[in-house]
Length: 472
Image (cartoon, rainbow, N blue to C red; front, side):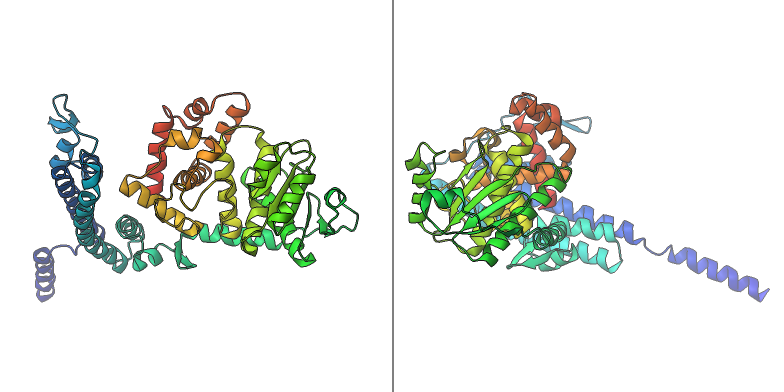
């Protein structure tokens, strides 16, 4: 009898106490609250921007608010929506201004005022999301923790706790994503283990033309000569062969594919560069080439020439890999795509092979559309891309993908690299189809539509943007 009473009493206490809280359910409540609060901050920023006649900024903030919390009425109305039976639909009577209407002399001050408000708002958002992430970590909710930190990084790129929790590693003072850390280590191994060729003592055609005595080495796919030591030329041979291995792997080609030998000449001074061009029979417009940092020819003999000038040895290696990719792409795909693809691919590979992207076939870093930012370290590019998106400085995708080589300034060149990054990491099969369609004669935007299943460049830009926000 006493035992039965004890069991009943314990059961009654359990009923009164209720079930222990479910950590996942608690996290969800915290998450929902944080997201709604973040949306409110964005909507408030939109109102402030609107009051300063920064209508494009207001539209951007309302868009972010509605994405975070579709039930946010202020944001939806700011986007020109109305609520019909619980669903937000376009309101034909709404007036949505999309262009800033401040005078040029006033716009910077107005944007600065918005930025001050944004910093304060984002500080609050970060603090709340950090609490959500900490709760997930404490309760060992791996997926929920990852989701929390990913959202937090949209508001604080350098949040150390979030970066480390997501597996980022610092390199040269920059945070590098775990996948990129692994790929760069793999790229370094490809170069370190590549064929280093053998010394070639036979006089070369360049030596015959110039009267120079150069250090020369030859591998299965490259003949490299220059005003460098045998050890340095050996390193360049490895760079080129390592780039070839990485290219074959990325494009899923066989070891015997793309086996044409490429001649590469490396000189140190502008004077040597000029003499190379003066004696190069394949070049017609010699004056134009003298103003460039080097020469790349695909026919009749694939060849490259580069002069070091004020660059360091890191730069010389970067040129070697960069030009190797140019040649490999020409061998593989032919004359398809525009400048963005040729340059973007070379940057994409040198990033993985050498953690660099220093070869500027375009006027890339200084006044060429850099917006006062330093674009000289590829490890900064992901953050700069996100900053461009956040500040409305995102280059028009049509200008990037249809632009001539000389039109690709810093921002456009960086976006070209990022478009390649998106296509090869998130849409690789679609990218291969895109290339195949152009090889068959399709125009670039038509190939984009068919391969990526979009209406055109603008929709591709939206897909890329969504991926960047989640990934970088």
